Image 1 (tube, rainbow, N blue to C red):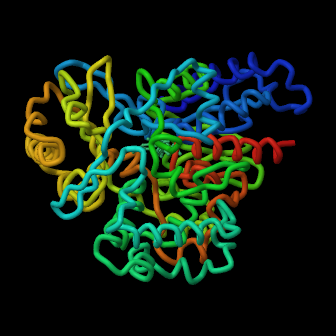
Image 2: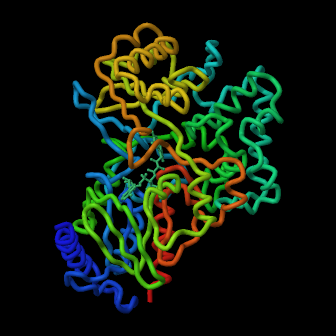
Image 3: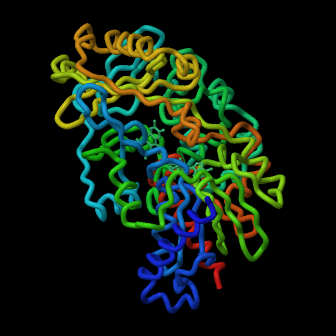
Length: 492
Ligand SMILES: Cc1cc2nc3c(=O)[nH]c(=O)nc-3n(C[C@H](O)[C@H](O)[C@H](O)COP(=O)(O)OP(=O)(O)OC[C@H]3O[C@@H](n4cnc5c(N)ncnc54)[C@H](O)[C@@H]3O)c2cc1C
């Protein structure tokens, strides 16, 4: 039965691919796959997140026949629109923001006609340190005032470490790699910041983008993350990573970021197979047999397009090299949820507040103003241990605690929310957390090159494998394009 389904889908897929393959003659046989049951396609992409979709798009454009096997009933992975329960307002449960130098996702947004709107960034933002609230101009990425200058110096040192000829995407090649990869970010911060405020600030600078605590992640990993916050022409900077204006949080997508992957998936048509969790990949140097619950498929190449932290949910036969196994074991997902409260009006603006908070409040440690269909939203991240504590808590408790934070940060008006939304990425079996997988000390210097190294016909994509903007939508797209180029280069 499942075999029939797989063949029917493959038939549709190869037909569609053949239709799209006009002009692919330079690739020899690629793209001329005819729609015969049991055909072998050029490439199977496992995962219909942005990395898998970008890989499939590039392959199809080059005339290759492609099947995308996606575990869920939808495309987009960690980019996902949800609806608030009462008003049905569209909320970004996952990725939301885009900023300068994220040119690959920006190009897709233009191609699929998804518009951006600027993130509200006027007035003051709040730095929250153990119950103490201090205001800082929203234009600053972090409160670099007199009492936090030491952290500023520490972060400047971190940035200098990241920029000093940093081999972006290959941090294991950094001249000081072994030492930096032997430290957690916490240990690194303690070396260069001595006051508790400075340390708190250095920790927020890391935990805000990664949703992990500083003792969970290698210092080398986060220094690479800073260096990756740019492109081939603009070196990555911590300021760009953390900023709203001119930074990674500069704009958001009208209608939700998920419009991009949803439209990409629609364009791929029958090549997309949903509800198809892949269980095993059996391969020789010539061919791979990919078994999913929606059937068994065969291809000359496979791209596994997902976080390395969850790619070991698939059984590989013959087994993978020890270094690749070391990668999957050394990476783990952050723990994260976004809590959104909808308001009739943006009362925080009346107080001269931007709606942005950074700090060590719990459970919400970072907030932004967001929008849905003209409703103003306070959106907050619940991260790491705070999230794990609440993973199994009743929703009413989560709402109570999160609104409690908003009251602390913005005042009692925060109690008058009219709807809310929450999505627990930790409990999603096809994400197992977010926003990104991070590496523990020792992983990158011991196993780093295995992050992208193909194993037989199996290639690896996913934002974690990107050079620039790893961890972001842009990195996901970059990684998919890179994996597609590898595959096209090795098909003959
Ligand atoms: C809360 C949150 C906030 C974020 N905010 C931002 C932001 O503001 N800006 C930004 O740029 N990025 C942000 N990100 C990160 C961004 O979402 C990711 O970098 C990006 O979406 C990753 O894409 P990917 O294709 O690499 O992985 P994924 O999106 O995880 O795609 C992997 C796909 O593989 C599928 N899959 C998994 N296992 C299997 C299997 N066995 N068989 C078949 N399919 C499988 C999954 O269902 C999924 O669709 C955020 C993420 C989260 C969670």
